[in-house]
Length: 262
Figure (cartoon, rainbow, N blue to C red):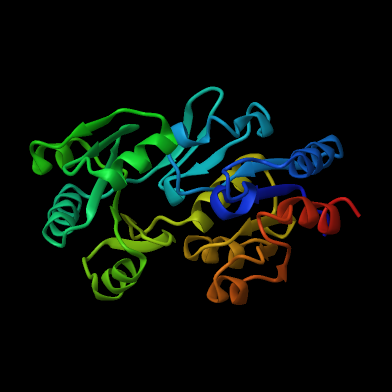
């Protein structure tokens, strides 16, 4: 079946190791759009972290953010879906992260917060070019509404933390080495992409999804065609229908040329 919707993860997929979109990828996306395909983004990032790449998304197209916790139309700000963490769970995750020595970041109503503000948090903040506010009272912040919490740590510690973490109503996933993200258990990129496709009146079989990390696996399985990058984890590759080149070798462009434009 013809591909009508292309959904790409950002880090490790759409952008190269320098966080840039290659000319070949940009050309392929625009060529696909000229032939009627819709291009969108499905990412763990907040809306602030998408600004540099939104020129590839046409007005009126929904994007999947926060690993599916928020689906919205960037140019209008219309929110199609939103599901944050429960207040008790958000507070517990913040406190646990601090006690374990992780660098904790919290997204609430589009704002970034942290009780640490250390080197890891500063590096993360710079990606979004946004202010990072302190958290004097985790309970008060949690009560305001938390979209997601992230622990930044050494990759091996993050993997262990994921294996050992248990909290009812919460899903924890590794989005990048050293990044452990906590979202509501009903949230995923697959569910977010499903809502975007329904809004666009695109069938599941007409969707191609591209990704490289653990938080992309459900999206790759859900899409009519799931494509994993050559730099993807083995578990992610196993979830995909096809493989493409790495993010530093124009993998997204090659997938579009092979599966959409031919």
